[in-house]
Amino acid sequence: MTQNQRRHPASWWAQFEEASERFDAAYLTEGLGDLINPKIAAPLLRREAEIATDLAVRHLNKPQSDELAQRAGESVDRLLATVERLEERSGELLSLVEAHAICHLLAGRFGEAAHAAEEFLKTQQILRVFVGAMRMERFDADLAVKMLAAGHEPSAAMHSGMVVGKYSWWPSWLVKIVTERALAGQLDEETVGALDKCAYAELSPAQSRIARRLLAGEDALIDVSAVRLEGMGEKDAAEKLRRGDLTAVALAARLIPV
Image (cartoon, rainbow, N blue to C red; front, side):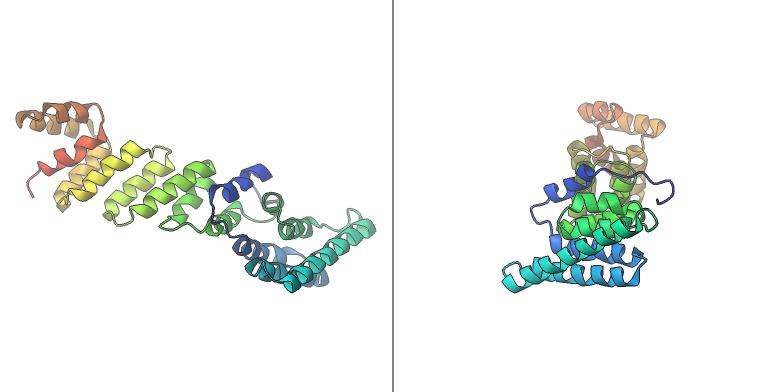
């Protein structure tokens, strides 16, 4: 088993397919097959698995083809029969965990395949294939994978990946902040709205630095900025800033001379 790696149950992996209406089974089968098959030690078994995987992918890409459906089914059946025969003959002398993983995959049991593959692959490798198979537009896959690897639930990682992907036009300093908050599990709609105001505020470099410090929660700067807001008659904004309301950050930062 991959050292110091927590395995996820098949139900955890199944969440990815459920989270996307555009889940691409062909992409997942090809990508995960490319990771699993090279790990099969026996050359003839590995070759049989590669052939079965290729036919399965071709069928998934052309599901209307009866010929491909038949060839793919027969190839998977042959592979299953081979694995069963080897298991009967060798008992525990031959490890077939990789072969079982590819059999799960080719049977469409994606959760079981991923769970089995975590025995010999890094979770992050598998995650990248699953995230890619979701075929999500304007999506930060790297952030999603980092969050998943850090232990966040798929729903939270997918939401954060979509948010950061949607607002990728933000200044780099804001993208960094939203990424940090996502990894810390602190990214909600209110936070996104407040950061979006900062993005639209067209802050100068100096004002951006102030905004970063305010977002980081520097007490002394927050107090000075709140006093400045009060002096301009913006008592509500000052109170919001002191309470930690991020919506007041853009206004407070803009008070700094350009």
